[in-house]
Length: 312
Image (cartoon, rainbow, N blue to C red; front, side):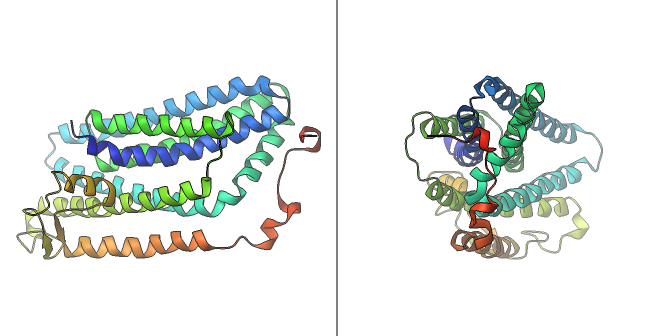
């Protein structure tokens, strides 16, 4: 079993899972401060339902890919490659958007969740419970869906990626407990910055993989190929297979974390660099961006209703 296959899924689930853990922790802290802890079971139900729904999405995606692979239709291999490339493009788009969006929204996350949970508590009774459930369910499902989409886009099968995903979830939950239950200080801003850089590099590897699947689809249509080495990727710009193969250590580690490939073609190199320059540029700009004064104004921060505010 190649444990390097577990590293990308661990990093992604750790980051995405910690986002969900933050929402869960803020909600439970709000319920405790508002003396509404009887709603805590709805939080647990929301977590469980979100995880089950995410797993269900993963099963559906895997069944779709396996169904195409098992099909006897002559066009099935081409459709399979295009499907894999399509999953890669969607995963790249979603993870890139969430990477930038979460960085921009991190400063106001606590106020947004407190405002949402405050309006939910005001409903009272079963309606409040369903409101808490929905808030948690959506938070967990969103992060779970992105993780599942990434795993499907990487087309990683076997035990190692699953172990990486479970370890990432466990680590994210552990960080949440340390932060909200035991009161241990964690530099959340620094955590997301570091994990964001890792995620940026990991997703850049999906760019190379998606382009390779598009090329494979073109190769199955022999009349579309104009070169022997590749159909649509252009000439090979480097070949380090004999020096640093990406199927052996340490190349396999570089491949898992940074998108390294021992063979790169021109279009792949251009796509990789363009992704890093554009998405990476937006990401680092969001790290240094200043929050507008209107957003920093206390009057614009949504908080718990006065009757639920702490009097300490």
